[in-house]
Image (cartoon, rainbow, N blue to C red):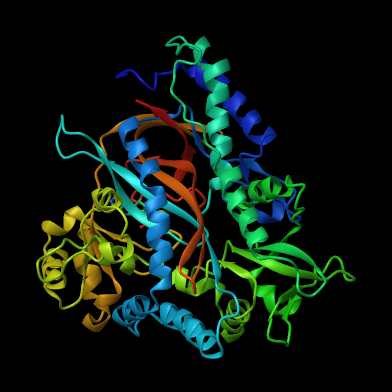
Length: 510
Ligand code: ADP
Ligand code: MG
């Protein structure tokens, strides 16, 4: 497959642009146009959409790595459900991150405040995504996936990803066989991808797990969103999947994070049900069974104290949260570091504490770890401080703060000067991670109507859905739920699709 993906002639490229553009718009493989493409003034009421950046061909991806990542997802779900139940461990993590990180500190306060009065809801939903890159030690060695990060809040692109798989499937049936360097019909191995339906199924199970309404009001699901979201169709696909359910019927509403206190109340009795009054339907009240957060993961959603008040208001309610504060904290990079710091006799792995049953899961999980170090004063931390200050060694590393959503990391040679600019007392809020360097892949990205040819880097995400009970410590539901392939030009460090660096892709297994 050395000639895959094939070169296309300029006129074939033009033809593919037309086909993909139309397919994407016809099937909602779309975003709201970025201001660089369409100034906000040109579309004041937001009636326009544009095709998401996407690869012309599904990128080649080693089947062995794909299977490895799919195969370990349920163990990851279980691991993060268990960590979410270990409050003492999470308290320790928050302490180690330290006061210099106001965001995590405030988040933890929300948990402590609810704990004081007692949680009324013990069930919890995780819609997770574990992200990987392919790692190969040397030519000839067996490639493995290594984890980039584990997302426990607002894991995005599940809605667009299944559509991307369908687009590439469509092209493989209709367009690729006609190219000069043709690929025969059904000549590619394209795995099924049910990410939108799979994630929606997780929400539907949770809606049922909530039990009957206690207030006499119809139950609903709330998607808690950011104002001005451009990646809205990704979220809408999940909503439409949910609304396909006839029994039970599932009303879904989008509520901006900034309007929580305006449109919801918590009942005064011991049940603490969350009631929602949709502003557009003044005479209706719903009891909220599930809150699915596509916001609230970063400081910008909490501009003032009332935003923290709103998060507390949700957290203390009976609605099942995706995620709770505990699960959000479980998803910090600090937790990932504690799991993945190389074992020493004085510092053994904590995995066996969380995954007890069979050691196969433990070794499967460990195989996906790449070395991550703290920047504290432990043995591992002191080693990391040396690496981070060294102009040569630092080139193999990325430095990460406890933030989500892209654009926060410091890469390679930028690490030493950056750390110099930060007070040493704040260093423990960062982690230092070895860079994963995947084997080179070529592809063509279609972005805003133009083709970009060249070397690309692919990042595989596997979705998982998990429902558990914090009190009885039982897992009620644990499923793998499809995948995401995101691809970026190999000159870019970050790969956010919505941020404009990366693009949507799917796997052609090799
Ligand atoms: P965020 O929470 O902002 O998404 P990530 O840890 O996923 O943070 O990092 C953002 C991007 O940086 C990733 O999508 C990936 O492209 C790149 N990246 C992060 N860690 C590594 C690593 N260890 N090796 C190579 N690239 C990485
Ligand atoms: Mg990421």
